Image 1 (tube, rainbow, N blue to C red):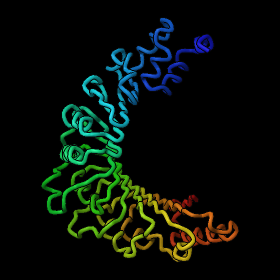
Image 2 (cartoon, rainbow, N blue to C red; image 1 turned 120 degrees about the horizontal axis):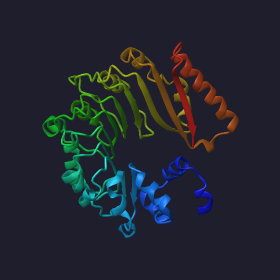
Image 3 (cartoon, one colour; image 1 turned 60 degrees about the vertical axis):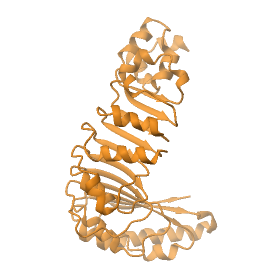
Image 4 (cartoon, rainbow, N blue to C red; image 1 turned 120 degrees about the vertical axis):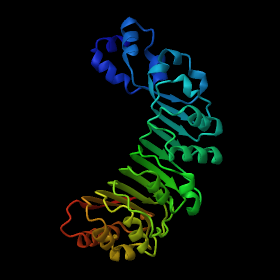
Length: 321
């Protein structure tokens, strides 16, 4: 196998190396020969995925060239060891891991905190993120985002003018108010909520937000669709919009045949919209006869097209589970 690899040109070998994280790469190829060592030393944007502290035998050889660091579960890592990390991803992180961001993460350009396990330290790092304590930060992926009550939001979060893109999941039905206030130059937002409440009418429109993906993680669609009216009033300059909804069969079919798809609100409030995708996730499809189901799907798609006539970049995508 090694003999075959040695016959490949350097460009292809480097392309192959990109499929390995740094530890696996060095365990597999380091010290095989001088050529491989030279190629490994030429790699300047490594990704390191840490599952355990037991495998750090080679870390000192490449630590300064790690650009992306991914840490799983409660493994205790040392952020200062990887001095040129720009992209940090923590899965199921605890207090000690999050505190390293707060103390040593000021050079980071992207931060992802996925399912953190420590409430109070997570609140602290959120406050730093949305108060411009990380001056190079441009993107965040944050799950289980919490913020104070409406009265305290603007006291707790100031502004982060350099944040350009966010991916957020939250049980706070008005978290978007805090985010839009804190990120005046945000251009892209992916927002996943369990439910949505009426947005206060005094929220200033955010005119730099151009792209929104909005996911409702609830089989129950809001009965009062004026909720979406006040929601979209806060982002009037959207150019690309994706809405994701889940629905359970068979009860939802009659509703979907008459569903408005938010067409009146979208056409009235989002006058700059160039692209719209409504992503419909249907669950429990096995309870239906396939022929009946396919006919329902045709009717649902026809209903969507009727609501958005002459809008060729507006699409309905249906997925079955």
